[in-house]
Amino acid sequence: MGHCIHLFVFIFLALSATANNISLYPANNAKDINPEVLLKITFNKTPVTTDKGFIKIFDSTDGKLVDMINLSIPAGPKVPDMIRKKQATYSDVPYEYETTNYTNANTKAGTPSGTAKRDTSLYQLNIIGRFTDGFRFHPVIVKENTATIYFHNNMLEYGKEYYVTVDKDCFAGIDFKGINGKTTWKFSTKTQAPKASVKRLTVASDGSGDFNTVQGCMDFIPDFSKDKWEVNIKNGDYEELVYFRNKCNVTLKGESRDGVVIHYANNETFNPHPINVKTNEVPGTFPSRRAAFTADNCYDLRFENLTIMTTLKGQAEGLLIMGGRNYLKNVHIIGSGDALQANGSVYLENCIIDGDGDTVLGRGPAFFKNCTISSAGAFMWIRNTAANHGNVFVDCTMIGRDEHSIFARSPINHGKSYPYAEAVLINCTLDNVPAEGWGEIEGDPTNVHFWEYNSRDKKGDAVDVSKRYPLSRQLDAEKDAEIIRNYSNPAYVLDWYVK
Image (cartoon, rainbow, N blue to C red; front, side, top):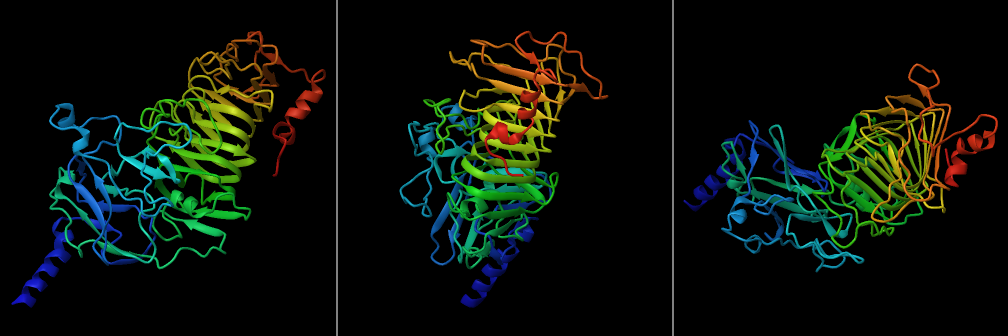
C-alpha cells in the first residue's frame, strides 16, 4: 500500500506542470544548466504578478533553502496596498537572503561602500557586480505569456541539483495551482565553470553558451586582468541590469547590432544615487546606479555590434562608462535624458545614440567618428576640466527632434561652472538643429570651446551659421587649419588611440 501511495505522489507531482497548462525553462530534470540561468514559466495566457507569495529555490541534496523571492516586497517606489492602508509595515515583510557565495558571508545587499549611506527604503535589493550597496530590481518580469524569474545574483553553484517552488498566489488572471514538491521543477547545473585558461567565452540567452547573461560572464572575468578576453554574445533578448567594475582588456562582441539587445527598465527614480553622494565620482565606487548598463573604472574595453538601452523615461543612461582607452564600434545606445555618459577617454565609431536631452553627458575626452546622434533637447552637456579634451564629433550626423535640440550647453550646476567645457563639430551633417546652434554658457566663457567647422544640411549644402550663439566659434579653413587637423585626429583628442 505504501508503495502505491509513493507512486501516486510521484505521478501527481510529475503531471502538475501539465495540469497548470505551463511550460518551464529550464525544463524539469534538465541538466548542464548555467548557474546564472533566468528561470521562465510560460502560461497559456498572460499572467499578472501579485504582491503575495514566495518563489524559492532549494539544494536538492539536503533540502536547504538557497534563495527566496518575497513578492510582498515592492521592487521600487510603489507601496503595497496593505502597507499603504497601514495594515502592515515593512518589518512584516523583511528583506533577507543568504549571500553564501560572496567573500564575506555576512554581506547583505544594501551594505554601503565608500562614503555612501545605507539605503533604508526596504525595496527589493540585489548585489550586482559584487557591488554590495545594492540595486533595486524586478524579481519577476512578465512579457506576453512568459514570467521570467530573477533570483539574487551568484546564489547558484556549479555541480549542483536544485528544485524550485512557486506559491499559487504569485500569479493572478490564470488557472495556476502553484509548483510544489521536490520533483516538479528541478534541474542540474554544469559540473564546472569554463577553464581559466580559456579566454574566449560565449553568452547566449537560450543557454547554449558558457553563460546565459552578460552579467554572469563579466562576473566570471577577473578584475584588472592583463590577459585579453573575448566575449561573443549571440543574438537574443537580454533583459538584465548590468553593472561591473575594474574590468580590463575585454571585448564584448555581439552577433549583430540589432540582434543583440541588452536592456532594462532603470532610471534615477528606480535606482537613485545615495542620499549623501550625488556627483562626487570616484573610480570604482561610482554612486550612480540609474543606467541600464554600467562599466565603472574599466580600461581597454571594446564594445562591438550591440544595442544597449534603458526602457524607462527620466534620467536614465543606456550606457554609463568610466575609465579610459575604451572603444565602441557599431553600437546603438538608447537612453532617456543622458543616453550616454562617458567619463574617461573613449572612441566611438559608426555608433547611434538616441536620447531625450543632454543625450551625451560626461567629462570626456570622447571622439565620435561617423556616428549618428538624435536628441530631443540639447545633444550634450560636457563637463571636462582643463586636464583633458571634451567631446569631438567628426563626420557625424546630428538629428534634432524638437526646437530645443542645440549642440551643447554649459549651465552652472549646483553652484559649479565648467570653464573648460569643450565641444567641437567638424564636417557634420545637421538635421533640424535650431539656428543658434549652441546653448548658453554660464560662468567664465574665456576657455570654453564651442567650435564648429563645415556643417552641412542633409542635402549636403552649407548651413546658415549667421545666427549662431555669439560665444561659439566658426573655425576657418585657412586660419584654423592646424586646429581642424588636430581635432580630426583621435590620437590628439584622446592622447590614446588604437584602431
